[in-house]
Image (cartoon, rainbow, N blue to C red; front, side):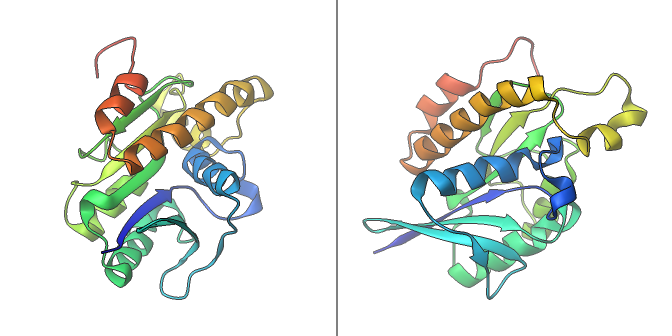
Length: 195
């Protein structure tokens, strides 16, 4: 019997948000789509653009919600419901202020950590029992600058670091797809300090 897995990149739609820190999840899933040679198209049943990949009995849906970050959960819920996807077959890729730029972390469940996209998904699914790949974007020097910081663009120097992280995120997603989460965590859940 065929299994469907869903990988969602979080971000904000629109040209003005391209290359912003908050769109790191979009960038990773877009890169995954390019690696697989698939094209994102408007989804018929959810406010998202999606692409499909088939690997034997496995159907993989790549999705980018078009709802803006704070309502990402609506699109994720609609895709899960329509395609009848189990929660353990859902992976969200997003930015994380609590990780330094260049760091990556795979979690199979957890809290939203103050991330509005994850907060929306958890609210719409009524659970935090879904996987997530967090891409570090570092934190601004002061909390009051947080909104401007996450909606700000990566610098040219940061983009060089980001390119490697996006590649690692794609590899991490592939390991998650094969069920090799322990290997992915060993490889990518490295951090200088404790969470």
